[in-house]
Length: 318
Image 1 (cartoon, rainbow, N blue to C red):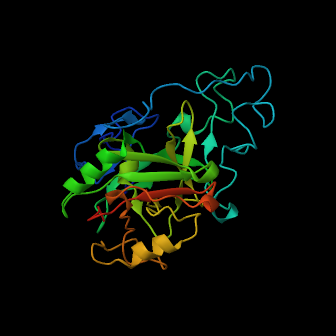
Image 2 (image 1 turned 90 degrees about the vertical axis):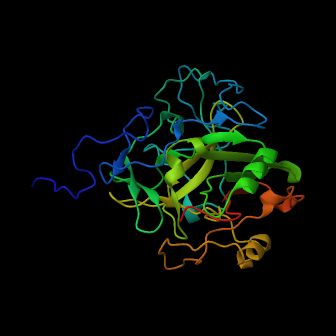
Image 3 (image 1 turned 90 degrees about the horizontal axis):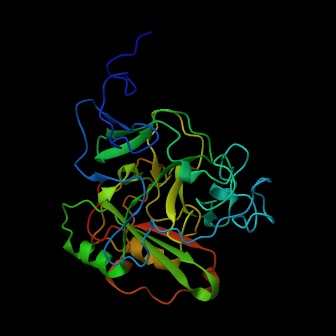
């Protein structure tokens, strides 16, 4: 049966939102429309105030030339495999205690390009589409079936320093969209590693992902060539064609709601409504006031925890 004109996957000449910079073209729907202009990049770029250039190669490579990369022998796999034989993330969703960072083999590694510890760096493997939603502006959906655990896309943009993040947020008005995300990784002895990404002007298709209180994606920091993490989004469940892709901007998919988050949730003065439609919808988009002031001294008991927050100090896209 011929595809109707209303089907999003109709074979028509369509704009490639990714500007041919991804493995696969990313279409826009409806035909003839396109999102607001921005500079496309499939990877992070250095922004004002960032401590490390994300394009630099600072990790040494493994020497797994004749044997496969396995825990115990591969320097990139310290504890266990990151992915199974189907290239699915091994610990995902409620099966894991917290979102643990992942280290992949890099450009200096002697293993082949087909190494099973090379997943996120391979880029898009599923056909995705940017589309106009009813109430949330632009969104992102899949045109293919995506199995649980498979890598979907990155959240890429400018890597910023904290002062620049504060400056940009202070300049926002209630009419501006906010795309800045803060990732905080709790490491040894109470130390916190912070990464701030802003794809507002320079970014990839991850900038079109909407929030959901019951998301189908999970964000994991994945490191390849340096300590600057790729913010990789994996399928938290099986995702069917034409299903909108979403993640929880608060970063609480794996991490329990703590007292600090509860306090922020109760502050309703600057909250923006959430239109995700989930049964457990919190009614408002996540709110994070921490970027208005220096980060408080972390709790040493939270070692290993990863926090990811898409901040909404005033307003958001939904």
